Length: 273
Image (cartoon, rainbow, N blue to C red; front, side, top):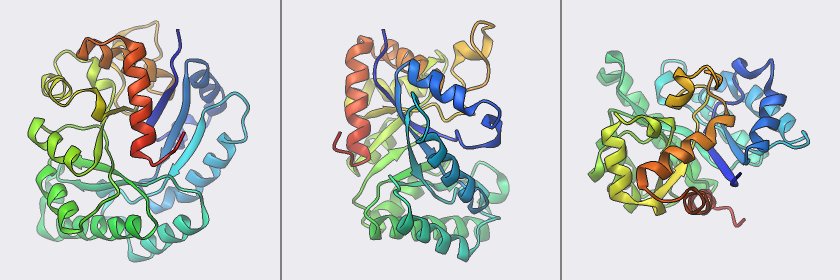
C-alpha cells in the first residue's frame, strides 16, 4: 500500500547521489514519494542545486522537485555578503518554494564565540528579510539555539511560517514554533525508541503540526541503519519508514497520518494542491 508522501527536506543534490540519482528518484516515486525539496546550504552549491532541480523535473516517473536556496548557519565561516546577493538573484529568477535552510547552530564550540554567533544571527535576519520580501516561507535549521531563533523570528515579526526542520527541541519550544505558524519536520529519528524527547513532542503537539522528511543523506531511519535488507545510505526512498515510525509513535493508522502530513506540507509551503 503506497501513500502520497512529500519529503520536505533533502540534500538529494549532493555528490553522494551523482552516480544513481535518476534511479533513486524513480524508486522514490514508486514507493509514493510524489514531491521533494532540494535544500541549499552554501553559495558554492547553488549552481548545482539549480541544475539538479531542473534535471530531476525533466525525468519521467520521478517526484516533483522544489527549490529552497539558503545559507546554512553551520557553514557561517564561508558565507560572504555577495552570497546574499546571489541568493536574492535566485529568488528573483528561479521558482523557489522557500528559503532554506537557515537559522542558528551552536553545536560547535567555535560557533558560540560572540563574533561568529553574531554573524550567524545577522545572516539569519538578512535571510528572513529576503523571505519576507519575496513572500516565501522558511526552512529552519536549529541546533542548541531554540530560544534565540524564536526571539529573532518575533523581533522580525516574521509571518510566513514554514518548517522547523529535524525538530530537536522540547514540548514548550515546539508549541512556541507552532504558535508562530511553523510545522515541525519529523525525520527517521522517530523510528528510534530511545528518542524519548521527540516521541514526547509528537504526542503533545499532535498530528496537525507535523510534516515528514528524510534529510538525506543524513538521519537514516533506524531500520535502515542495522538491517542488511535495506540500503544503509539514507535516500528519499526511505520516507515510508518515517511515516511508519510516526504512525507507530502516535498510534494512528498510516493512511490517516499520510493524508494529514501531506495537507500539512502543502499548507506550510503555501501550495494550493
